[in-house]
Structures are given as C-alpha cells and as structure tokens.
Amino acid sequence: GRTHHVYTAVALITETEQVRLNINHVSFRPLTETDIQQYCETEEPLGKAGAYAIQGKAAAFIERLEGSYSGVMGLPLYEVAEMLNNIK
Picture 1 (cartoon, rainbow, N blue to C red):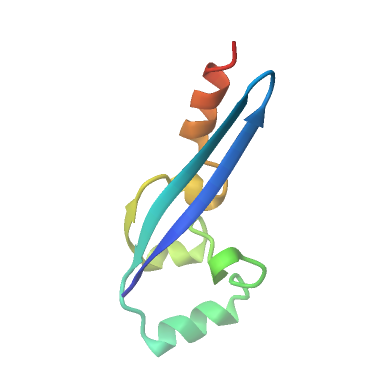
Picture 2 (tube, helix red, strand yellow):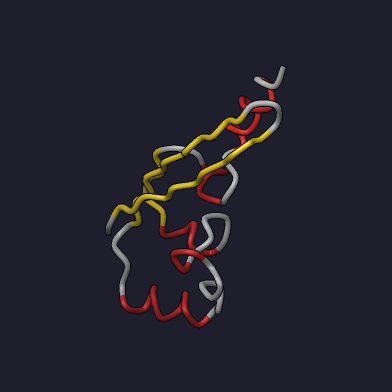
C-alpha cells in the first residue's frame, strides 16, 4: 500500500542537446504475504528495476499511476516524440 517514484531520463543529441526527466508516481494496493509469495514464485521480479514490470503480472497490484505508463516501462514516448519534433 505504498507509493514510489520512477525517474526516467532521456537525452537526444543532434546539433543541439535535449534532456528530459520524466517523473512518475506509482501506488500499489496493500499486498498480502500470499500475494508477494505467489508473485515471487513467478520469477517475473528477477532482473527488473524495482522487482516489477508495470506491463506484467504486477499490474494487478497497481492502484494508481500518476504520470507516464511508457515512462515507467523505461521510455517516455510522449516526451521522446516532443523532442524529435523539436529537431530543426
């Protein structure tokens, strides 16, 4: 039942430099010991930052997302598209 923050930075270097920081707030519902044990048994948390993938089984634990779904996945698409549109 806690909220954590996911920070994703993107840099685009052309003739100019553009850097963006995407900050998202992800709130999990309260989890039981059984929830946690069953999730760990899937091995999905292995090799993941924060031990979950928002697009995976852990999506069932998310109560609220403030920000960018794609940013939590690792590439904030809206911000990248904006940066690409700014290339002159």
